[in-house]
Image (tube, rainbow, N blue to C red; front, top):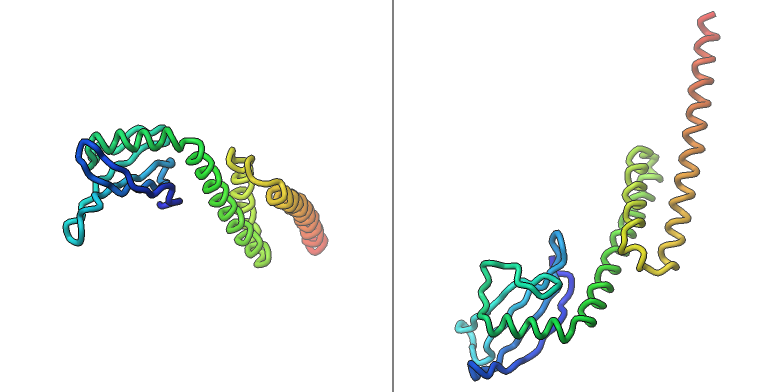
Length: 183
């Protein structure tokens, strides 16, 4: 899944005597990785050919079916080293934005489940939200966003506990009524 376009630029490859356009995108499957590709700018129309490779965040090639020559791989290694701090900041911002969207989506789902009185599903969704709030990435989110969510989630758990106590009291009352009816 594409997370963010990180870099686009031109470079001169002296050993080929060519100018290439290079691209770096941040991707995520199980982990984050860079998808890189480049093309010779003199290639036009149907002649356009791309060389591509995938790199981990350390700048190591992770695609063994890589379609990129070694001079371009070296160029991307240098690009990663020169832009490492900027790329890491971009990754952190992209991660935070993605996590905030996930949390907001779970908040909406939890609210809808609660309004529909689907208590068991709401309990499961609250656990999912709690899990998201405990992730390492959540520690980097702004307190103005996270703290009200934590406060409301804590309130949900308290009210849910009170409702469970009332259900137990009602169950006991129901048993007493049945007992009285059977006398």
